[in-house]
Length: 432
Ligand SMILES: [Zn+2]
Image (cartoon, rainbow, N blue to C red; front, side, top):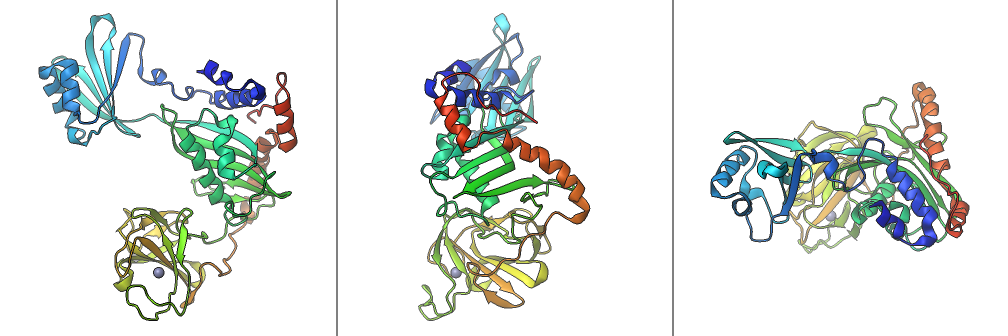
């Protein structure tokens, strides 16, 4: 696998050497894509089959192990899941015991995070639901923008070992962190560059389960923006700050959905598309597919959840300092969201739909300040809280090594140097 990566483009060997270092820095995690480390013991021979379209789990098992054993295996499997839930392309791993050709176990990957493990015990089969193992590493990457941030990240050779889908997810992560400083879809210029340290959890097949940015720098037309993750209480509810400890966030997200088209703006004199009469549009409509997750734009408490006239299924959240947000036309509510629930900024509260008075699936979003509707696209959103004074000491202790992670990545000048050097020393990042 490493040999394969080295073959890509000799001219950029220095870059690839960095990429290899980055992914080899995982410590105890296996290299991306290696299944054997996780499942195999030396005496086992693994046979991996994928269920074909039109085939059933029962059909596959019968072909492999015969009708009698198939019945026993399915009986054990049903203790964990219905065999009918198993769809085409599901991976089924048959574990044979060495040369004896005795089947000792079967793993069925139910979904990316759960596997049904079946083990033979005399004439019977036992089953258990095991979580697909997750590994953690830190990926360091830097790059210069030629066209767009998306294009630059997807093409970044440093990330060559990461699935393309996951590389494009990094754009969402950067957009979420820098949304209040920069509009990546409009402001990014050729020659801008970024340096990022990203901690990710990934599965044995190399796909990312989750991740977050530890430190990032984005330089836009010569102006540098930093975002350093800091979790003073160590409860996972940290935030991002600039080098002075000021929040890079504001108290509200700019939008309750990942980037979507705005289909109707705040307008006191709009002709309503369903009612066909003038009726103030006191919010913003975001057109999006049914089922798109909707996020709470700020921390708060749910004050309404349910059908609400023309808004259809709606959620209302009360926030600090007299602010209220309202989300309408939902197809369904997220699990655990009820009146009185505390929600965090960015938490999914429901899903886009077209309940109530709506001609197509969209989210209707309102902001109310001290009882008065405001335009979410132009209102001046309060700044986020800086690092609290009692945490300043811990902050500066943690901020310096995080920033150092970035300083070990090449800036734009060094990138050019790395590209022109065919061999020899490359500016590899080191773990601090
Ligand atoms: Zn609307």
